[in-house]
Image (cartoon, rainbow, N blue to C red; front, side, top):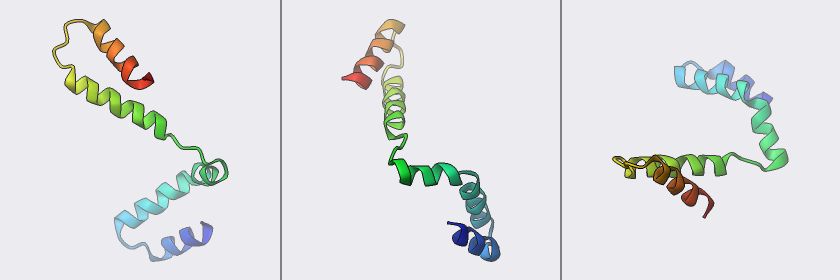
Length: 77
């Protein structure tokens, strides 16, 4: 990864590549830990996606308890 970042620094003349290099440098440890552990935040992202979908579908619910129960059911069923 270090060689890639050095090459990117030398050749990055356009802004998106400079942004990519900065992002990779900031998240370097987390990226490398993924390859050691194999863990991701995919489950959390999935829960967030379900909650957002339910929020869109539940527009106008009169009972907030029903909204909460719907989220719990969707995420843990």
